[in-house]
Image 1 (cartoon, protein in one colour):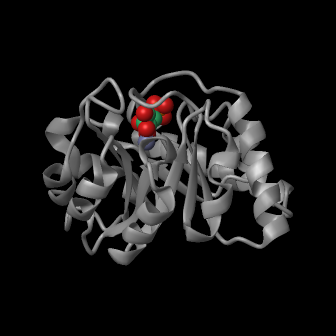
Image 2 (spheres, protein in one colour):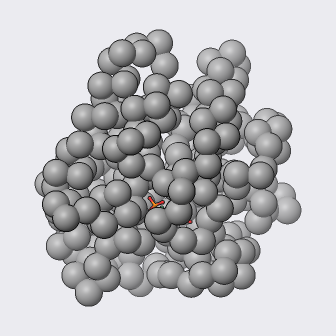
Length: 226
Ligand code: DX5
Ligand code: ZN
């Protein structure tokens, strides 16, 4: 089942609980948590305390995206009973295989993210250690940027590689996702679409989530093979 993961980066931080509840009610199935350290990316966002404040406010599983330089050190702080994925950036890990192994060892699913300029070959030999591969479709750091079209090619290649080799990781895309491109993104083979400004920047958050889900699932039924 394809899932939409609204990113709270674009939510109103003064009422984060309500913002999470709103997307859950509308049919989202994951909550994307963007963690930035001002070092790996030129922005600072939230840490584990803010994420943990949402436990009990929403039942949505957390999809933690660590845009930080030292994921080995900080990943354990994001483990909760509600954490489904902890995703690290391939570019930030000197020993990526070991890092993915340690994340799984924490009892959560391990994800690996690739920046737009990073080739798929970077992760080719660790794919059996990954539960999720996150294709960045913007340069990480900020919400509201434009989708980089070459990311779709990367998704198609990754989906083909997964089929060929029989891997079971999910494919996620993050950055510049909206109603205008969600169909194409879904048809390319994406299982989880992150959307920040397209959800929380919308006048009607509920309607925005429903529109994105419709676009995602219509494309999936037109392309049953992906
Ligand atoms: C960007 C973050 C994204 C961001 C997406 O660095 O990783 O998750 O919230 O925002 P939109 O959907 O607005 O591009
Ligand atoms: Zn993200």
